[in-house]
Structures are given as structure tokens and as C-alpha cells.
Image 1 (cartoon, rainbow, N blue to C red):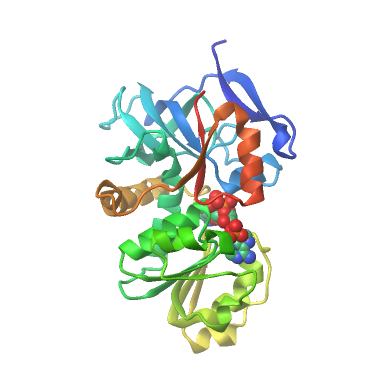
Image 2 (image 1 turned 90 degrees about the horizontal axis):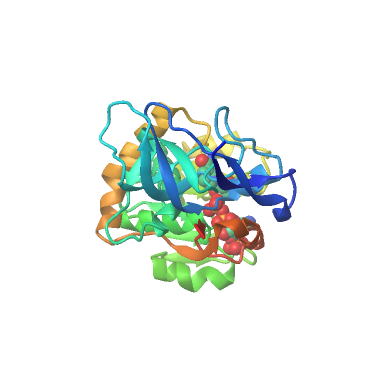
Length: 321
Ligand SMILES: NC(=O)c1ccc[n+]([C@@H]2O[C@H](COP(=O)([O-])OP(=O)(O)OC[C@H]3O[C@@H](n4cnc5c(N)ncnc54)[C@H](OP(=O)(O)O)[C@@H]3O)[C@@H](O)[C@H]2O)c1
């Protein structure tokens, strides 16, 4: 059997559960391509998968990694324009922490102008998540206020930039040490959530929330009339009481969405939107990947420890040794 190497999860557990191991080469099916991975993005969900709390969707490789960049080295057939030799980045449903990864053609994006191939691995997950929620779901409009929780996260650093580029007034929450960098990224106001209750002073039209339960009441309080709250993470718990009276008085909406479990057709549609509306902004240099560190792929344990510490600002990527 031909074997590539990938980071596998020996037993669900801590970062030390990650192992650089030989596994069978993935084979692209029709409408898929095989990518020689240059870099893979690390996402918070990978930590949950490692702990055994977030199994990959059916059919996805068992090892982690939801986004990669690299070169197409084989095409599985089907009718599309992607070719061997093209540099791409891709949203995938698993198996990105590897030397080779398979991606559906509908989830491929070209490497943007002026972005190194390696750094492009930091883009697909945040671009697809932020675009689909802030633009598609919440329909942000120029002049509106966007509140981004966790501005220093991979998701947050992209949401702050995209919000500004789309003409929103951007408020974000983060620990003090990340404030200067967030202001440089374009945030109009940064709140230290460890000492200040955002809901006492913020009024937002759109809220992108990664905290969930612990912030639900505060988020509803912070919504403007007609405001839209989109919950995409549950770092602060999955349950909380929703005050419908407070919500209906301001005609507010609460959405909760996940990207990974969506159908191929839905992901392809999101990626089309990203390519049409977000990629030109990256090509023009108005927004871009924020890469905190590049860790060699075999040292994924170190990358997971770093993410668990929350000392990073933006994305951590794993690079081919
Ligand atoms: N639903 C979806 O489709 C989807 C897709 C992608 C990601 N997500 C979710 O989005 C979140 C971010 O993902 P990521 O990969 O970008 O993670 P990440 O880089 O590890 O960021 C996590 C962030 O949480 C912040 N944080 C912790 N407690 C906070 C609080 N009480 N208030 C405000 N911020 C707080 C930390 O900021 P400080 O250092 O400032 O504390 C840190 O920046 C995760 O919850 C992930 O599951 C959801």
C-alpha cells in the first residue's frame, strides 16, 4: 500500500494524542481533486475533534484538518476547469493535516494575488464562515454596526476586516493584549470583555457570536431594532434562556449555523459567493490572512497547545516539513 503521512488522533484526548503517522493515500472521486498540501489551517473545532467531541461528517477522513492550500496533483474526473499544476486553497470536511488531501471542486478557490500559497491555508474556513453568516444570513449593510465577539480569533480577525471593507462600524471584544492589533486591523472600538460588560454600552445591528449560552442575554440586549444575532460557536455553553419579550420588542432575529455539516451544494454556493464578493477584496489587498504562526505539520501538538492557550492572534497554520 502506498502511504502518505498525516496527523492522526491515537485516542481522543489532549494535544499529545496527535501522531504523525503513515496512512493510505486519499484517492479523488469524480468532481474531486487531490492536493499536495503546502499548509493546513488549524481551527478551534479541530481541538474538539481531537477530544472526541466533534466527529467528522460521514465519508470524511478520520484525521483532522478542514482547510488546506497547495497544488493540484490529480483530478478525479468530472466536467470543470480545475487542472493539475494549479495552486489552490480549499474548504474540506476533514483530513487536511496531511501530505495529500482530497477536495470537492465546488470548494476550491484560487490562491489570491499577493498571498503566499502557504498563507492561503488561513483563508477558506474564515472567509466562508464570516461571509455566509455576516453577509448571507445577517445581510449586513454599509453604515450598520457589527459586533464581533472574540476579535482576536481566526474568525474574528477576518470578520473585523470584512466588516470594515463592507462599510460597517465594527465593535469587537477581546482581551487587552489584542486591542492594539485589532485597532490596526480596522476595529472602531475594542472592548476588554474581562473587565467590561459589552451589553451595557454597545448597540449593534449584526452580532457575530462565538460564545453562545453565556452571551445570549447580553447579545439580545445589545441588538438594535431589527438586529440580527448569528451564533456560530458555543465556547460559553450551548444552553441559555432566551427572553422572547426582549427580542420581539425590537423585532430581532437569532440564527445559529454550522458550516462543516452543510451539503456539498450549499458549501459550493457559499464558496461561489466568497469568490465573487470576498476574493476581489483580498486580491486588491484591502483584507487578507492574519497568520500568527507557522508550525511544521508533524508538530501539530504544539499548534493545538498554542490554540488552547488563546495567546495567538489570528490563524495558526501547519506547514509541510
Ligand atoms: N459555526 C461555524 O460554522 C463555525 C465555523 C468556524 C468557526 N466557528 C467557531 O468560531 C469560534 C472561533 O474559531 P477560531 O478557529 O477562530 O478560534 P480561535 O482562533 O481559537 O479563537 C477563540 C477565541 O475566543 C476568544 N474568547 C474566549 N472567551 C471569550 C469571551 N468570553 N468573549 C470574547 N471572546 C472570547 C479568545 O479571545 P481572547 O484571547 O481575547 O480571550 C480567542 O480569540 C469557535 O468557537 C469555532 O467553533 C464556527
